[in-house]
Length: 468
Image 1: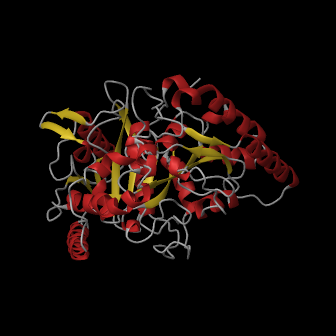
Image 2 (image 1 turned 180 degrees about the vertical axis):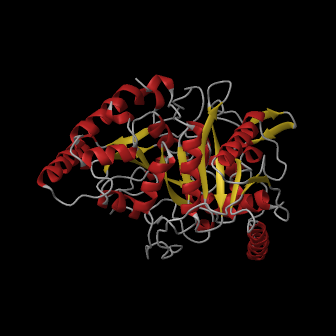
């Protein structure tokens, strides 16, 4: 069952001629044929293109031609990244006539590394929800429980990877859209610092002002695979206005302390989310990494300010875009927009004021993190919820959608990298991940900590139905 291998194992076996790219692609296409009807992760499949690419990849190995680090490995792409000649639908009927003129930077880099793109994966409309559903192909289901969501907006990507239909891929994250699906689906996901991975060729465009929050980042079944994808995808790109020439670095964890947070700003989380964080803290300590309680101050307005920039500021632009075609839109793209009804459009003065508040909170948190270069906290207030759920009970009281997302959204606001690592299962057999957060440009530090955490945790099996 080659599709069950890790991404790194696939790449290594292809390079050593122990595994055929043709066999590998066919195994994934068979897995998709067997399971995608139930999970509905794919918007578009490239059957013949992938088969032809696999034949070329196999011949290159036979000929001894130079190969890249992902040579012959099947991957997927969230349907918000351009692939030349096909539409980037982003979950919306309004984009059915769109045709991408060239590959996004992320797709070009995956291809240059030798990866074979199997297909594009499903999103909510406009990427504007934590539940993946739209009027194009409908809802995507969580492979662990089809009555639950795999999250959003990279929900199709996480479902494809978790169900062994893909070895890994690329998502995007403006408010948890990589990390929440990784947590819900039992895989690993990295939200990098803005500009560390190019988002050129992504829709909606990740430029000012949205690029302060939104980034492109890798998703895979484990952190070691994630690190390989990050190494392929990172690098300066003049087409991304946030891109910076930050080289890849090697790093250790000597002298690093981890600050443990059972929640964010005292916003309640369900007990199993807290228990996963405490377990992860003990595992890190077993690795020789000191873990101490941490409670930041001066960042109390972080969720509120993130909401201003993610929901309030784009609202007028979204209303203009859909004007006269509202009936064609799906509720997944309108749910957050409806929160702004009756509110005046933000003024320039308000935007500048909120930016100043953001900058002061960010500086305050970074000063406090000088003692704790890595923070450990929940990935979300809850595990994967039933489709359509929006309120959840905790011992401290009921929480709603934005409160459940409180552990992730501040780090979009502050432009800080966040890594989700699967740790355990709930009593309902749903995966629970934890989040590691670092200062800007410290992705390598988080990935090293994540690799060690996974090693201490031990194997994390996928959804039972998809292991056969």
